[in-house]
Length: 146
Image (cartoon, rainbow, N blue to C red):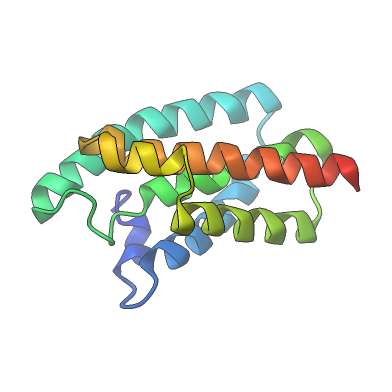
């Protein structure tokens, strides 16, 4: 259930985008946490995701099956981390969503390296963790610049 994003990964078209969208309401819950608890939750969800994605991939018989979207959940939450520190506004959430989807889909270097060279649950998670970090840095830059 978690690996498939509570069913959002079963969308017939763009399951990664639907999975990312399904992560948004959970982000609002995460915003209720103190900053250090938010960061700890990200670390736990990332580590748990390695296991969840590996088990789901094994059960589905495909390394990175499109229905596995827990990596999108964590990637978006990483992207939106600047909102925890700099304040929430809906347009920053929207920009973070777009930036994460861009980096997750296009996979420029170094994201593409991890996508192509790291296997298993770690590989499924790592490219989205890196995409989330890159998108989060871009979001942070825009938020500070504007």
